[in-house]
Image (cartoon, rainbow, N blue to C red; front, side, top):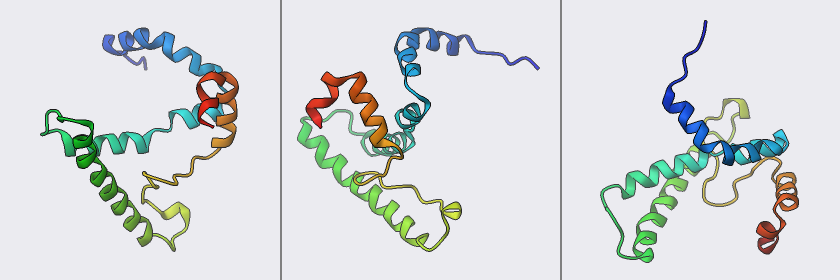
Length: 127
């Protein structure tokens, strides 16, 4: 069975192709670290819910005063979910990982080494 591809999807790939292809130069392990963004996407979704009715913020400080407590509440909720599942084997846990601090990213040291080799001027100042 032949799968149909929407013209919009093709156009999106064509526009992003120059930015996407350098990503393919990295080994699969590093690509996994880079594209594992579920936690980031989840956080962004929840923060959009908090800020959608605000329109714009008069200052950065005003945005932080709204968004930082929301991030803390999100993390508190996740911590409670993790605590409930603490005794379960990993295969049965459904709680999401940490979002704010201390999130463990598998193979991060190897990924950071490869990113440093590929982009030394961007990475080294922050190490």
